[in-house]
Image 1: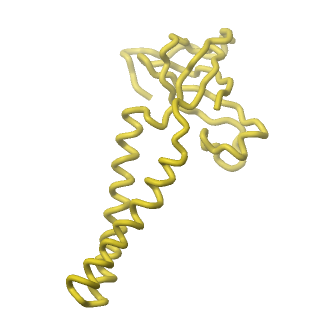
Image 2 (image 1 turned 135 degrees about the horizontal axis):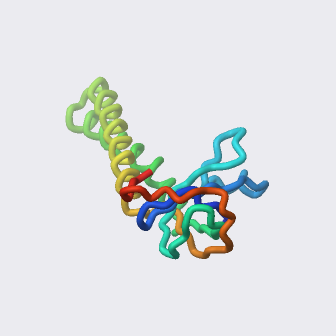
Length: 149
């Protein structure tokens, strides 16, 4: 996915971008527009040196929707199933199977949460500024003390 965006502010090699919603956006969901909103702000890797006010082309670094779906849905289900198996086969009690199913499910969601934090830091599911189009001068650059967003 490639899309035009406006740089709101920068901090080091990261830019905060404003993306306007288009009709095609309803089927994509990469930018995560909230219902009723026509713009979204996203963080993006800024390797081209865009500054606040620049109009840029941004693209998803990788199309990892299939991997993300696997992580979100399959990992918790697998761990819940493992809990049921351990409870039913090893402890031979339905009550333990139910309890360990819930424990496995909770553990699965914890794993998904940690993987999400890791992906956010490594930018594996992120956006990247690939081209500067023009400077629209709508925003003042905010890079005081290298502040993060």
